[in-house]
Amino acid sequence: MIALYAFLGFLVGVFLNLCADQLPRWRRLRWLPFCPYCEQPRPAWAWTSTLAYLRFKPACQQCGAPISWRHPLVELGTAALYAFLWYRYALSGEMVLLALYTLYSTIFVLVLIIDVEHRLILNVVMYPAWALALLGSLVHPTPSFYRLALLGFVLGFGLLFLIYWGGELFVRVLGKLRGKPINAVAFGFGDVRLGGFIGLVLGFPDVLKALLLAILLGGLGGLLFWFVRAVILRRYSLFTAIPYGPFLVLGAMLVMLSIV
Image (tube, rainbow, N blue to C red; front, side):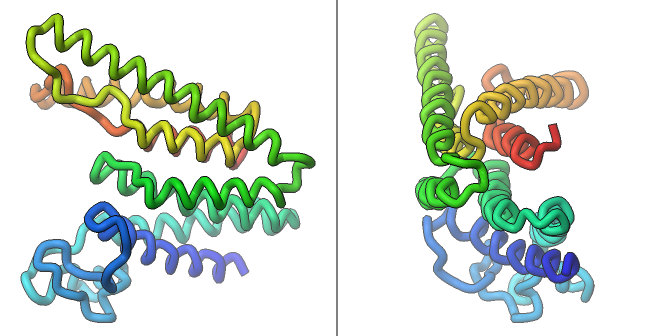
């Protein structure tokens, strides 16, 4: 069964790639898999990018543009994630948690992909995710978990909103001190919405643990980014923005799956 669940994860990875290709452009799904360069549909055998790579034809048949490595990585990574979830929860009989955490993990992966590539956390993803997590809190095996979920939402959304507001204030003040506006966002409002989703998924007090972990991971990631850009590549700019959503996702998933 674990192999079948992993195969389900593989197919979900194909769908996630489709969403990550189209939602940032049109905020909805319009076509079957297509080439992002010439916008011509892919042949059926290339809908699954892993198969295209195995056939040694990882390129568009119309314009020759390569199929991004992201596509097979997402397909195989999601399959591995689903296999882990089955091993972790199905074998111990926790089928409700398996269903919930499979759904939440899928959403987290989609948020991660889009934020890394486009620095966007889309409303078309987050608002349905809120609704699904709220419904999920009603069937969570923890008694009265919906109350903890609602409190988690308030804390996750509220605390990140304070960080967002503080970042906006910091950029404005610093821009005035420099004598010219700074065209950078210290902290996006999409991250605030993601914080609300994390709160609904984890509830109180785990949402606080996830946010603290995300802050620590974000700090380490920022230092690593600075070291690579400034010390190794010597291309660092003071106001270079990096997406914060991946650190929130990583922190949330580590806490959700009880890895930390």
